[in-house]
Length: 471
Image (cartoon, rainbow, N blue to C red; front, side):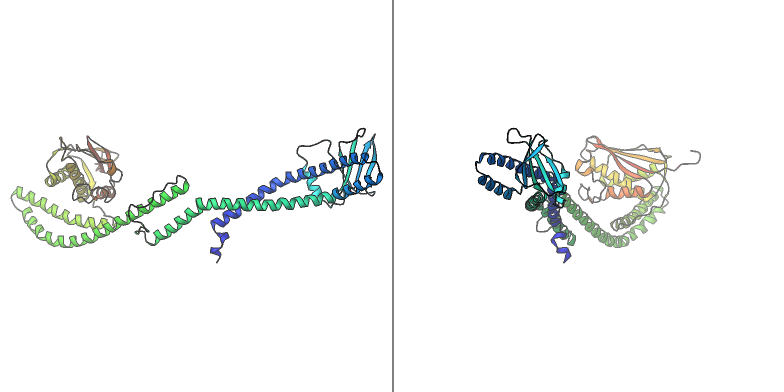
C-alpha cells in the first residue's frame, strides 16, 4: 500500500532530499569546473604544439618530422600549427581550415584566473562546426606567438566526456553522503520518533497501563537536545494524565460513597431533626438557642452530603444569595471549629454592621474549613491566636483570616487548591480548600492565600458587599 512505501516515510524523504541537495551543490560546482576544464584543455594543446615545434626543428630529416606531426595531430585533434613572425603566419604543420568557416579566438596570453562561463556554454551547447584559434606564448626565439587551430567538435566531445565523469562521481558522492546522513539522522531522529509514536499508540489504547515497566523503574532520559525534551515532555504528560485518571476514579468512588451516605444519613437525621425542632420551640431561651443551633447543624449536615455529591459529579452548586451579618456568621463558624478541634484565642475584628450578599450555608462552610485548618495548624505553636478582620474594597468585603501556625509547606503550597493534594492531617480528604474556593467564586468572590511562613498564615476571602443606598 501507499502508506507503506519507503518514499512516504520520513526516512525516505530525508534520503531523497539529501541526494537532491548534494546534486544541486554539484551542479553549482560543475559550472566553474567545466570552464576551468576548457581552459586547461586548450592550454595542453598549445603546450604540446609548442613542444612539437621544437622537436620538428630539431629533427634533421623531413620524414621524421612528418611522422611526428602526423602522430601529434591524430592524438590531439589539432588541425594546424603556425608561428607568427612580423604579423605573418608561418605554417608549421597541418592545413588551414576551408574558407568561410567560423573561427573562434582563444588568446591564452592574457590568462584569467576565472575563465568566462560564456565561452564554456558556447562550446558545450554549440554545433561543433567552428574552429578554435588558440594564441599562446612562443617556444622558439624570434617568434611573436604560437597559433594552434583545433575543431570545436573535439573540445565539445572532451567536455561531454568530462561532464559524464563528473555526473557519475556526483551521483556516487550524493548517494554515499545521503546514506551516511540518512544512517546518522535515522539513529538520532527517526528511530526515537518511531519509538515515541509506538509509545503514544500504546498509551492511547490503555492510559492507565505502564507498558512493560513497573512504577518507578523507567529508564532516565539522558539526551539534552529537542528529542530528549520531547521524550521528557511525553513522559510527564503520561504521568499527569495517569494522576488525573486516578483522581477521577477517586471522585467517582467518593460520589458513590456519598450517595449511600446521603441516603442513610437522611434517615438517621430525621429523628435528630424532630428533637431539635422541639428544643427550638422550648420557652427557655437558652434551650431554644441551643435547639436553633442544632437545627442549623442538622440542615448543614444534609446539605454538606449533597454538596459533596455534587462536587464528585462535577455539578455546579447554585448559591441562594441573601443578606448576612458577617460577624455573626464568623462567630458561629469559629465556635463550631474550636468545639471540634480545640480551643484557641479567637479575635473577631469584623465590624458588626458589615453585611454581605451571600449564601449562608456556603459562606459558613468556607470559614468553617479555614478555621478548622487554622486550629489544626496551631496545635504545636506557643502562640495560638486566630484573628479575622474585614474591610470593604471595590464593592467586595475582603476578609483576612490570620493564624499563628507553622505555615504551609512549599510542597503543598503550589497545588493547595487542587482536589486531593492537601489534607495532610489525619483523616483529611484534601477537598476542603478546593470546595471553599469554588463556593466563594460561585457567590462572586474568591479565596486566595496571601502569605504563609513560620510566623503564620493569612488567607483572604472576598464576598460581595451589601451597599446601602447613599453609601
